[in-house]
Length: 304
Image 1 (cartoon, rainbow, N blue to C red):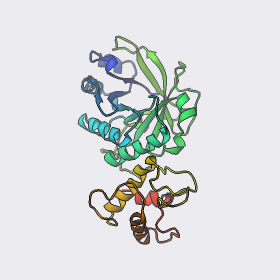
Image 2: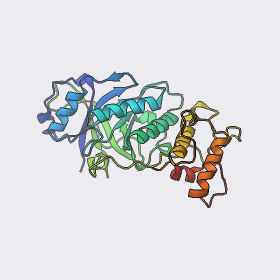
Image 3: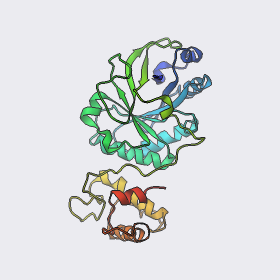
Image 4: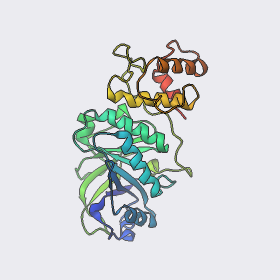
């Protein structure tokens, strides 16, 4: 059975006949909430309240801009929280990746997911068109049990884009759909074969418990001293510093590092290596790589 949904923004305004929308076999809706770190959809509250009032599973989405993934994740999370969209029954939040200009879009998505998960514990849908998904980003670098893919291809064939991935759950099949209750055209979406709306609705009475973010490095690479070899990622590049800072904050939270402001600076020097080694002796006694964070260390250290 296919479930059908819509995604809307300020373009659709507030004059929407939601009873008619629900009667047109629409069971889920994602409402644009934020863009970058300055924009909030002025119609969002009305749109969210209207969709929820007729039993449509409703969520919010963020339109990403290059730069400051942590700031954007927190900005989005605040607006979701303000509208009750992290509560049970809400559609999973969605990250919209389509703006040009990302130097490393996979790295940006990983940082956004990590910051969003750290802030909310919530799962996430990542939206992109098929070109992005085949040429610019790779879900294998950031999709996990709490991240699903939402693919856009306007082929008019619901649930059948020219793209496949095990985590692909939703197909946006047109941006010019007709739905009762709207005076104009609207984006229409359908679940993929084997998926249903229930797979991306927050349940169990609360936001799902957070897990460690996806491992962000290639095989054979690790987090270690900034002075180490090329396979050691210690914050030499700015794109690495958010990940190193996550390690440092986890060490602080678990009592293996000083708590003063500024210690988690995103640079992996000897003090960080010593804190990692102290934690490993307690939590990872079988390791032979004390002071370095490999994928298995990451999964344990960054789990709540």
